[in-house]
Length: 485
Image 1 (cartoon, rainbow, N blue to C red):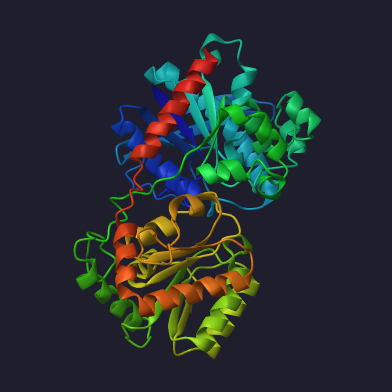
Image 2: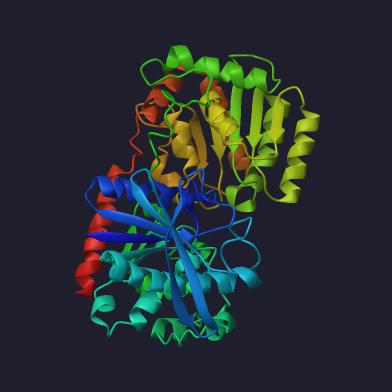
């Protein structure tokens, strides 16, 4: 089976959010299962060709309504996966960021969908390689299932199945009808799109025309069927319920491994976590200028500092914890100006035990995972999330809201001897709920060290590898192909 992943982000070449991690890891797991998985993404100007041994493969021309586009195809092999980069000026080849502004991103990602069609045809002609499944991701590549459908009278395109993965339904590429018309895209007359006024919504188009749909966790697959989490697409999701898969994301367990991670102070595993992990906590404290105190609960946050991540719930709760209890807090991330200023104020007020690094540093992030006792992730919604999984793998117990992938991956402490539990879970979207759960975790850490250690070891033993998820993706691909035939 040949599978082509089409995405705007792919780690490590171009990463903004979690989609990059999925498309950067899942194809390698599929190849281990004998699936010929490959990836195509825009050839952004900031991608370092020398660093990743990227070389020119071929150039082709495609005729579009706006003229003839010359597309340069570059390639490399990363983690055993063939990766292709498409450059075509003026849209792709000289930019410094993945995303820019709506009135530029809309036409350029529409264009990307069009040249991917040409790329697939050229791969067939030049190398006798053509996908059985085109796996598109989020709105940026959501036009592709419609373009495949448009060519359904051609024998080759008629057999090509399409699958869309929803990484975050809140971002949809909506109101792009004018750009679609300008690009020469025919009318999208699918009745579910027409009825719900979604013919100019890129993600909506993908949901209507894809053979199968998936989201990045089972819980999120349920949540997006309702108005609160569906962001206007819940009605369309419900019409495709029989084609919807909720498949939990995995993480790269070779990359995220406290036994080998070069960015942490002391390597450890579940077998020696009690003896060795404490050195990472001490290193984190001392490197940030915090008092080196083993008995103090160290709370870590690695996050985009935005509403979705529950920062409006977290910050008031952290103020109360610092004013009443012996805790230390380390925050790493960037985001909304208001949230950043609230955190600066928190650090100024409690400078002895708070550090807020309003930037992003991958090495520091891994030190926080390896050194903090409690990892705070109180998201309003979280399609899957990887932070909580990495935290558990590194022995930090997560404190999360019961939503999306957080609900699927973190089992709540049973409140007794920890016969069950890998962290602390709350439900209500209120700062009081965050504070109450933080206080519960604090008391558990202080008064029940054996319980804490038991949960810590259980958390580290959770299997978040891509193996199980890859098998479910293969099952979905097989259904999409069968549906097409």
